[in-house]
Amino acid sequence: MPPALEPLRFSTHDLPPSDQFAAWQAYLAPLIDIRLPDGLSAEAGFPADHTAWNLGGMLVVQQSVPAHSYSRLAPKLRSNSIDHWHIVLLRAGQSWTEVDGNVSKGERGRVELRSLGHPFRGRATEAQSLSVYLPRELFLDVPAFNEIKSNTTFSDTYAKLLIDYLDSVETKLASMTAADLPRVVQTTHDMLVTCISSSAEHSGPEKHQSNLALMERVRRFVQRNLSSQDLTPDALCRELGISRTRLYQLFESSGGVLHYIQKRRLFWAHVALSNTVNRKQIVEIATEAGFASAAHFSRAFSKEFGYTPREARNIAAPTFLARSASPMDPKDGSANPFGDWLNSLGH
Image 1 (spheres, rainbow, N blue to C red):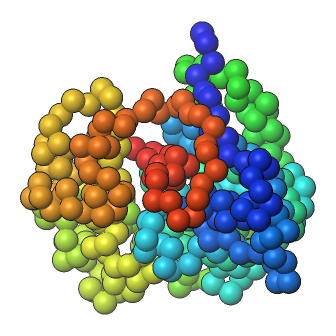
Image 2 (cartoon, rainbow, N blue to C red):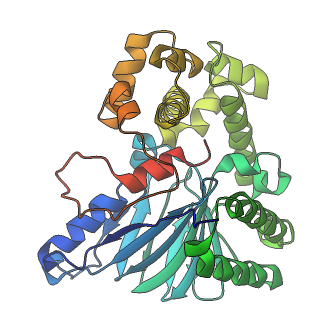
Image 3 (cartoon, helix red, strand yellow):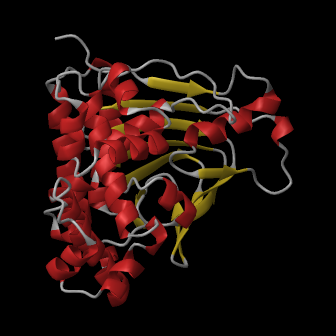
């Protein structure tokens, strides 16, 4: 069988040095905000490379980047509510990431695990890394993931086995067939679950664990009931046995629970519209996504993605095939292919 994957490549090397950092910022904007270290000027250049592979159920990213600071804080979560699990293996360099006042150090030989649905910030030296993005839905039935602390590092025997496995996956990305992809995703899932379940590092503060477990239950319920008109804050409170105040506190950093629900519905609809096999009418997809009004759906969709539902259907592309990404002008409102991959992951 022929290889199934073509990477999505992005590099700043061919840009004028003064434009490199702004282009890198724009390309990673759907995920994180990037800043230069104190005392460094963007005029000096920022030569960086980013190669992404879409296996359908997970993304694998190879990255080489100069020293920088990064953050995914509450405003970013409100504007982009992706909440995947992010696994980072540093090949070279070091990083320091802070979540809720706790700092973890990333370096070669460690596995870092954090949630994109929880605020974090940090800094890194010049570094090379391999990252894996896995949709939260893959782990809905894994108890250990309900209580794992975001920003956890692992360096035990199971972590080393996971590193060896991901090293092997990386070398075979260009030759994988379509039949290989679901097996690779499932094996990665299984090894990560073993790594988490065997670690004592997930025993965090009781309140923090409780909040994470509760948010996980909210996400499960929302995902299962996206099409229901009865998916409301009151319904969530009844399902979870909590007060409205507690629910709103949980989703304060995401712009509120209604904002979160609408984001999930829009992302689901975008994936459905981009599926070349799905020939349902746009109004049918809007209804299945939980929108009572086609006009409301169209307005919300256009505001979220910058183009209409009809345009989303017309520009649909194959899931696993990509192209080299052109250098981006930070003032340009064009679509970001890496951001599209992140948004559609797991759907």
